[in-house]
Length: 224
Image (cartoon, rainbow, N blue to C red; front, top):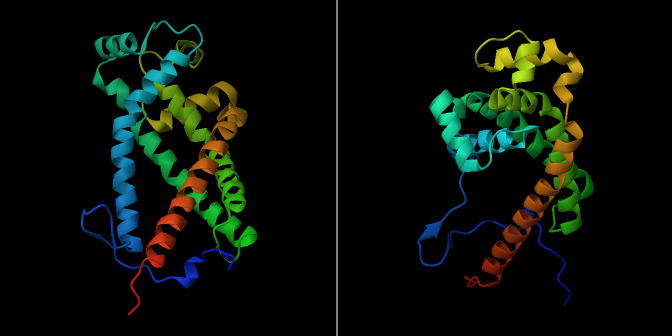
């Protein structure tokens, strides 16, 4: 008999046990949100310095020969704080990005896959479009984060800023002073092109393993 697909509404999630590490019960909505928030805080705390190094090495005529030399130079000349100037901006960007991303994905799934069955094509399309929309909407925050990370000398001199630029509000004012409203959307095409395949792959892999693990567990349940 042909497999008609798996629909989440048909299932009451059982308590699962993975690889002998004990029982796993799917978390409540509140628990999931708290866990997601804590994960974002920790992720950005770890990754923000890496983002600073990456963006400084990508600058035009970057003076850094390697990631290690960039870390050493920034640490010696600007201190530890240089790696976290954009931390609050990163967090501020991730909140609306993830909100728009998930809301858009769910909306598109209701439209293209109303039965919420496992459908790889719908997951790829919805995931890619959700990432593109979220990326475009949060580009102004990404522009400000990049300015805080790179401390571009040309930009600071044109804006008559001496020393180092700090704070999201200052970054927003500086971008507007230099390029007006269009300045907030510089690089939007590249950001969208980067995010679309990333979120499409993420959602399709997530939905596949959710389908596979849950379906496999249900098929092996002992009937009462």
